[in-house]
Image (cartoon, rainbow, N blue to C red; front, side, top):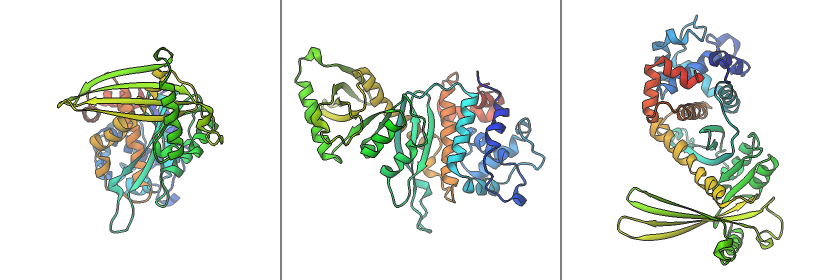
Length: 375
């Protein structure tokens, strides 16, 4: 069972390296981080709002923190989060979350990138920060993220992220940008399996996979393992068909793709309100033979990183509008938002949207503690 939340927060964050010099440490680091997390949970989207939350909820915070020096000012939150190493902060936050909430092993992990558009600074010539995140689709949990170097792209950032994740037994899904031999090898090296989307950015592989799928579909219908879904919404009807086939030797005769074992396809037939129909096929390579149903779960699960993480961050947390830019501040605020979003999604007794749940956290100490500590 989860242990006592407030106590374990101190335990997990006590060893985090304080980026401040000794003489400027008026407020303990754990105070700054705990108030920042709670502030964002309760609707604060800026350092000023985080300070105001702390000032208004001083009595509640004093139950968990030593507030003998009061609540940190807005500039203190800004300076500390600008200097704090994001990877170490996220690791401590994830460790604390696992201690206070029951988290199952991640079977499906989606990896995708997102640009923090508000971090663009025209005056200083600073490009917007682009981050690659890993999302546990079943636990609604952000497992990690890395900032893409300005002079690089997702292709180099993805292996860096995978190197710090626990992937044993997991299926990792990535879109076509991450369909790279180094990425496939890193996933297998870390004990996971991959489902990678293949598009025309890999022309040779794409044509070989498409030909293998066409050959597989020429078999007797009874021999094809396929799974279908039908959905209606937004004025259209969509029927999807999923199928998986063992990869023939001709897929990778040079042996460049580590453990390429199967190929998969999804066909989407959409009919809009006017009766117009379109058919689209998407192709994948897999490192293990999945059933058509398992393949469908992996492919559909991948889109939760867009729908349940990235879209929600923009809509409920106004992430794209956030103008935080200094140092590591944008990355660390992103870490906090992802943690808070996952915590709110895993609390299922309140059947309301994220905005309403944040408001409820601000108004109710009992509900706030339930979300934070699984109380």
